[in-house]
Image (cartoon, rainbow, N blue to C red; front, side, top):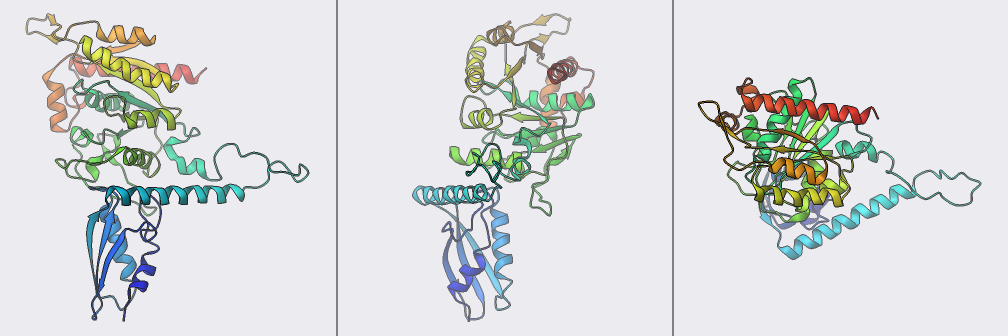
Length: 392
């Protein structure tokens, strides 16, 4: 007859996909009940509510237990750890990662040579670590550009989607990461609805839509479902989007950042050293002041700001005159504060909003509109600036 020890032994090889440690070691396996005929029920305590990979954990548990011929049925019930349990789990995962890194470092060949009598200090990534870092690696040639704003409602996500398409229309290979975890919207803007799939290496397969490679939280949760995470989980999701996605070769990777100066903005600035930043604002003075704070984070982290985009700059009236309903000059002022170019001004047009709601960015749906032409011009300026820097 099956016993709990056998169940736990079978689950030793099931790993939490975010913490990369056995769910047994992390104390995620609870309340194991075994019926005489071989039916097993158990609870799995997730580290966070709404874990996007809960289905993978459930599937892995089923697969591991059903390898035993005496198992006839498996019922997995999902629960959530309390705050103290979660802290203990994260600490165990951190200690495990530190131990693994020390072990790998100790096995690194003595590059100082046998005659030196001591090992040279370790400098740079561990063996194979550059490949594991994926898009986060400095060796990767993809240009990473964060699209940031100081406050919500200035059209940052709309700018990201249309700028990505504009770069693609000019011959670039482009990807988008929707890192606005709480306010994810890129899936809707691109009309992507399929749930996440993984390849044989258990890497997330990005959506390929309108010629853009895209990952977003909407791959894992329903559009109306709230993400209730604390800061550490945001950082883990950011790393997963950069390292655990089967990205093809890209020229540009745009990162739709959450508004403000929170954890994600800091993580991108500190952990992805090659990432550049574009600030999005409206002409309104309040928006410009708040956007300045987002730029200040980049400056403090020694992150390069490559320019400012002013969105909702003006409305073209039916008789042809421009009306500056949100004021004027905000983008130029912000650019002047950081001594960077004003990359362009996007007019306020209903076609921009309609394209986002319908899943077809305005650069695709209305390519001859004023907004589309503005996005294309901004994309060209960014390309020229990046190419000039690369040429030295």
